[in-house]
Image 1 (cartoon, rainbow, N blue to C red):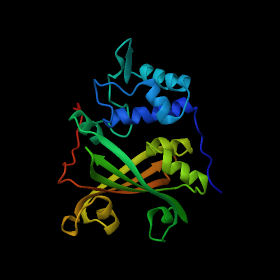
Image 2: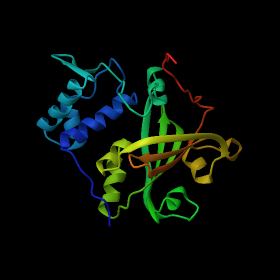
Image 3: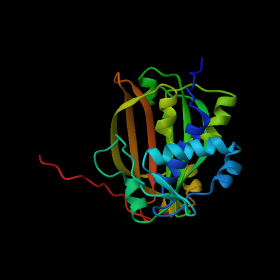
Image 4: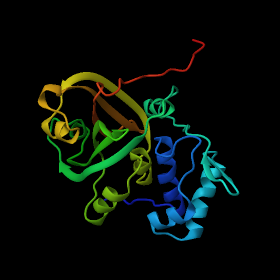
Length: 243
């Protein structure tokens, strides 16, 4: 049986989509987001829905509205609990880059017995394959295996509407509490090379493997990301510590 998604009001869903674009530099700092009529047309919603979404962004400090000047991005920093330091994507945006996320495919797949989620007791998982574009060029390919069972319309909706993976998991009641990342260099699979428009001679890529557990310590997500570091190096930024 599939797990039930806990959808919020439509204006909050649109707010999250707009915030995701701000955090990834699609709407740069100091620039205006699209006008309300443009957003109404894009999302197919009413004027009041768009206004409520923008109002939320104003209250959270991401944008400000000024008569005659539109709605301007004034902050592109998230209070994410994933890291005490600056997130890599935030570092890229601060450098003036634009990051876009493209959903490649979503499937419900059977797991081999050697898969980490299978060893944690799952027989199948939701697999999301996504591509990050850096200034329009393929940069990161992610394969996320998640402890969810979805089918039919739920899969179609996910393909069309997911922005943030971790926000999406939270909507299904999967709250992530602990992360472990492992970094290595490996030969990327052929499907990854095709998605990233790389040739076989460029197949040796930086690989990040993530294990994410919920508040009970159970493995919820297992993901693999391949980075084209020839396009841009991977950077880890730390805050100063008194230790």
